[in-house]
Length: 131
Image (cartoon, rainbow, N blue to C red; front, side, top):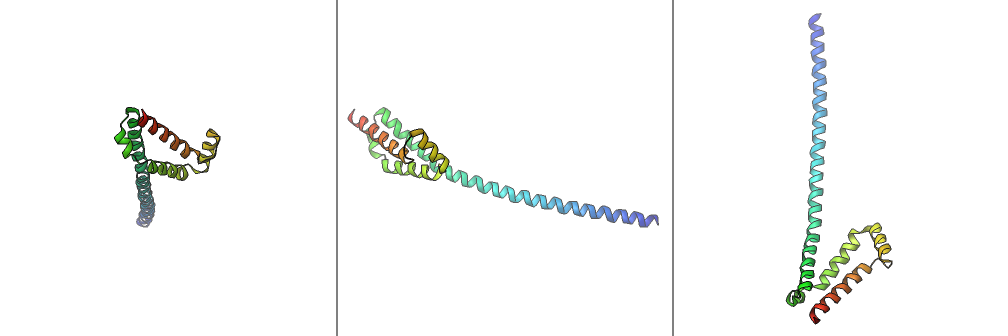
């Protein structure tokens, strides 16, 4: 009788351990899937940020060229590409809230930032080329 009780206790302990193992394995699989998803999101964010970083670097070169009067750099600078990049960034990244915010700040139509940047670039470029 004591052996039967001991055997039953061992069987119950084994059953609990197996349940615990299954639950632990399921949690492990969930964490592996979560990690995979987070890595994918990170890679997508890095890929999305790379063009922005290049844009900022190119724009800074342009601004330095304006400040220092480097005509050769200004001649090689593709203003239309810059405007297209700005326009794309505003349209794709701002979302409705960002467009509303831009409109509120400028008090104009949401496409105005592109016009403002274009005018600033033309004014700066013509000022350097004239001066």
